[in-house]
Image 1 (cartoon, rainbow, N blue to C red):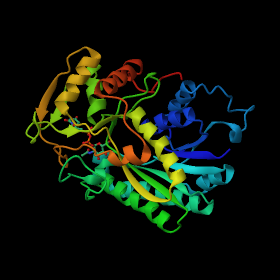
Image 2: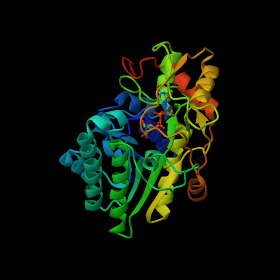
Image 3: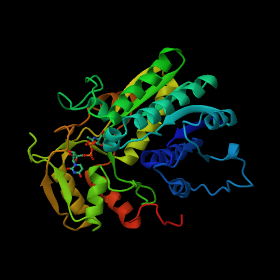
Image 4: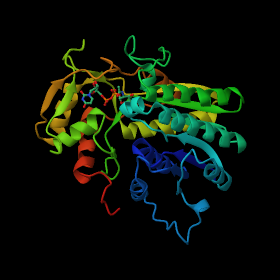
Amino acid sequence: MHKILVTGGAGFIGSHTCTALLENGYEIVVVDNLSNSSRKALERVRIICGINEDTGASTSPANSRLVFHECDLLDQEALAQIFAQYEIEAVIHFAAFKAVGESVEKPLAYYRNNLQGTINLCEQMAKHGVKKIVFSSSATVYGVPDSVPIAETAPLRCTNPYGWTKFMCEQIPRDFANADIARSVALLRYFNPIGAHPSGLIGEDPRGIPNNLLPYVLRVAAGQYPQVNIYGQDYPTPDGTGIRDYIHVVDLAAGHVSALKYIDRHTGTEAFNLGTGNGYSVLEIIQAMEKACGCPIPYQITERRPGDAAEGYADNTLARLKLGWIAQYGIDEMCRDAWNWQQKNPRGYENASV
Ligand code: UD1
């Protein structure tokens, strides 16, 4: 059977997407360098999906529904071996550096890693006749938008090197598809993925102090940090705090399965926003999390964070019409599942036996 290659499959969105793929009957090969992820996430994906197979002696990797290779996309030889070993039908490409602040400090590392990894992957695809790729992009490519909701046709601009790597990496598979009419590409622009698998077995496990709002709020709720710093309450929004389109990671994962089916039937390149279409302010998120965890979440108002937009939420019409995809979960479920994950895994995957 042909397999789906998932780069960065041990990460937050990657592990949830692996689960969705396996639940939909796909067989997957995961490639991840574990630089910002844990192999435990994949062990837990196996548990969720009831994969008990022994990946050692009795099952050859070619027959396993989930195989894992610890491999860096910059290691061209190792990547070539994986493409030679499996019949790859399509690729879902998550593996990339993703911290905005770090990208400002180390822009060249970001350009090298994210661009070169994507180029190496497309090169192997070309060599082995793999024609389909789903690329993990971000609403960050819209920068500070002129208006909301944001449609795929909105102007693209970025405010930091991480954002530019997503912008440039979109162009690589796009041109790759332009060079061969049989190729097909889906560029998925995620809004703000939060939540966790309802089992509480997989979730977001940021290393160090989280940059994003939700993981930070979770740690305050768990008593690990004293308060949330709200970056500005003087935005032109109803309560003055920034508005974003938060989307349950399980919905986002389902979007990848829909995109995979779409590119199976269509050639060329298409970009899709994956968001719920609903905006929530920072204060509303804190309130929703207070409801989920049943405890007060202290906060203080601080300076705006440079580069932040007042407001951003998706026009998801294209994903609804063309992918037949629609978000199922609301903000309360996102907070409930995130809190469940936090409670069951107070230190993430660290020190967990499985
Ligand atoms: C950020 C990144 C974006 C990336 C996305 C997903 C920036 C400028 N943008 O988007 O490139 O694609 O994450 O990973 O970093 N907030 C607080 N206090 C906090 C953290 C955030 O008030 O401690 C506010 C922000 O001002 C914003 C909202 O919460 O209004 C969401 O922030 P965040 O979770 O970092 O996501 P984005 O800024 O949308």
